[in-house]
Amino acid sequence: MAERTVFQSISQRHVVSLGPQASVWDAACVMTRANCGSVLILDTLGTLLGILTERDLMTRVLAKALSPETTLVCDVMTPHPQTVAPDTKVSEAVLIMIERGFRHLPIVSPAEKILGVFSVRDALPREIGDAVSLAEFNDQVNDALG
Figure (cartoon, rainbow, N blue to C red):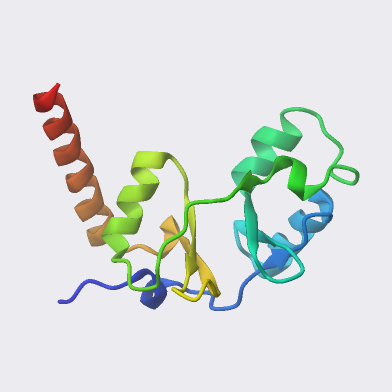
C-alpha cells in the first residue's frame, strides 16, 4: 500500500485562521467551534505569521494567568512555524513532530498557499510506528557517530 501524504490524510480541508490582533479568547472560541486544536495566524495578505495551539493556550496563557480577553494571539503564538509540502509523507511529518516536539504542521503549497494543518491525530498507527522506528534509528546513528 502506498504511503499517504499529509494532504491526503487531513480530515479538515478548511483553514481555521485569525489575524494577529485577535484575542486569545477569540482564538479559543474559533478552535472550539471548528473542533480543532490549532488556529493559524495570518496577516491581511494571507501570509502565515504563526500558529496557536491548545498547548500554547495552556502553557503560555493559563499557566501564566494571562487574561484571554486582553492577551493578543500574536503575543503567545509560535511565530514562523515549521511547515510541510502537501506531498510530504505522513511518516516524515510525524518524524518531524517527534523530533521537534509539536503536534501540528501547516501544509503549504510551493506557491505559499495554505492548504490545511496536519495533526498527529490524522496519522494512522502504522504511519506513527514507521516514524517512531525512523526516530529510533536516527538516535542510534547519532549515538554511533558521537
